[in-house]
Length: 86
Image 1 (cartoon, rainbow, N blue to C red):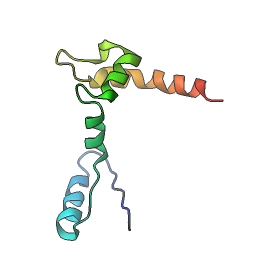
Image 2 (cartoon, rainbow, N blue to C red):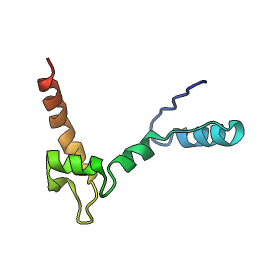
Image 3 (tube, one colour):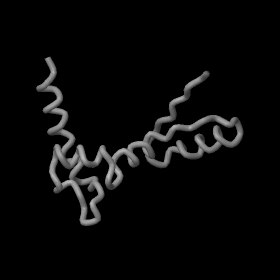
């Protein structure tokens, strides 16, 4: 089995290539962006974990994760992970 990773910047054609691989060659596609969104959708264990760690300030009024809070929290999270490593 071959595994192909497709990376690139915004509007670089990743979606186009993915659709071609699916339609012409019947490749199975795993979309990491989609999986990441599902992991933090409202009511999910992932979102509950984020709220437990960073507080409800990371939620908008609909109870969904706010990108701005998440982006601000990442540097602190990296520092905590690094400091807990031997």
